[in-house]
Length: 210
Ligand SMILES: [Zn+2]
Image (cartoon, rainbow, N blue to C red; front, top):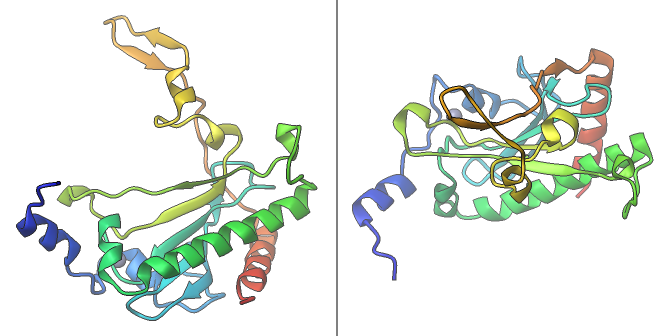
């Protein structure tokens, strides 16, 4: 049996989640589908003010700007920790629905653009999709929850620390004996406006189908 510290767990699970005036994502949460927030474009909304999520298409990608793109999924409320999702009725359910719909829309677009296969012998014809998100209770680093969904390949397809393939990477040593592994640098590039607008339109079209 886990010994819960009710004072701290309750404090975290029921933390204030109302709109924060200094939070960009709280501001973005007010925009309608199709609107550019000044950074990305809103492509999807689900649920109501308390159990809703919204998604944006990011203008930049760490992958190939001609083929790749990143979608960011966020709760409308200013949640800062995954453990808080359970506090709002329907928020978990809507997350599942949003996540699966977005992954499906991304897959449909990638497959259409690249003629990729459902069960490919070749890596080049596969549809690699990854998700990344993190949270902490460290005050300095607390931020509005956001989960990225993107095709993992090239520079952003390198093994991550939790992958067993990361552990298998060749280990080098600095002069002082400290160990390190090599990684390719990631350079984020803007997606060209014409492609960005086309992608946003396609995603909105696919995602609005119930
Ligand atoms: Zn916020």
